Image 1 (cartoon, rainbow, N blue to C red):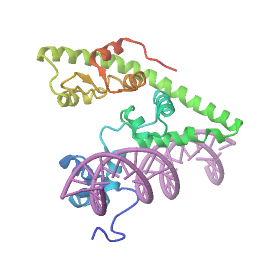
Image 2: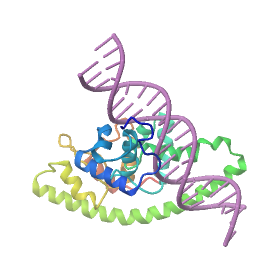
Image 3: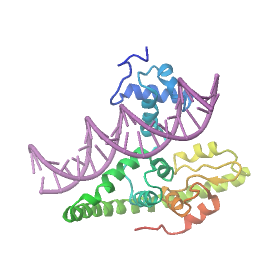
Image 4: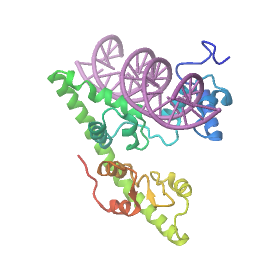
Length: 230
DNA sequence: AAGAAAAACAACCGCCGACTG
DNA sequence: GCAGTCGGCGGTTGTTTTTCT
């Protein structure tokens, strides 16, 4: 039946389809996308299900516009890796390859084709937007840093009492709601993300060969330093 | 306020490499 | 070794939203 032409639904996903897919992934986890349609009762093919989950439904996705820092990282990494969007996306937690690809296309790909006048207008507009975003971000960052520091110190205190951070899932769940996800690797005590998104982003730039290899020590050190900004 | 243009977002398609029987 | 299947990736297109004139 599934081979019949026209069996698979196309076009925008409905809320009900999203719900079914989320339920399915909750129960069975990611992967085996070919069986998803059958098990979840969806008339969507494997690729469609995977794409919808990866680009839209995953809980760890970051919503909202690309920040100036992220933009800079995209430019840096694109200069280094070219159109390897998934590779670039790995350095930007919460962003998908599709998102980055779209962003690159709309902002940079046709830059060479614009007239000088157009590009001046474009730059002025981007600058205006950038300045606004920076202001917003600074305000948020000030609040967030203070909050994060308190909570991180509290967590350190608690972990000292317990002896060690034993299981990264527990830690992740504990602090998911209050700060950017921190993933602790059992064997190496490695932090996968950091206190604020900007820290990991910059760490990604500084350690391009292994963007996830940030020690807790480095993380704590980062807390004390001023943010690089442009 | 309205239409046009630009930007952002969502989704599909084809190709390719890894895996498996 | 080979064919089939699956999942991932990058390119592209269509639609919606936002911004500009």
